[in-house]
Length: 122
Image (cartoon, one colour):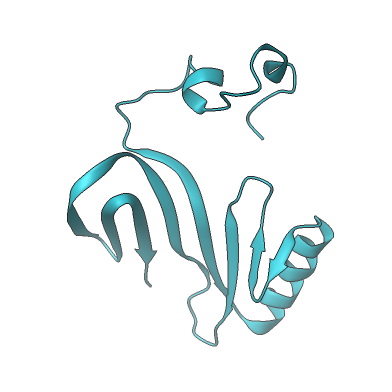
């Protein structure tokens, strides 16, 4: 967690980055928080990582694990050669007026409203 407990003594209502991490917070940066990470692994990798995530006492829902910061970690089984992070979802600082999508190498970045997604392919 990026906040130390002593910060909350001052103000327990405003726990935003803009308030508590003001020295590093830049409202001009478009990306805010990661909301979801999707990871593809071989079945044995899913089993091993799932055991680790359960060991951290994360809330479990189907193939997803929720952190205390409401970040979802979804595990997908694959038999393909490609393993690793295949998708990241994040929140944006401002609402995008239009749907925007662009290709970056083997990846696609999509922005819609106050959310964005990055899809990564081999």
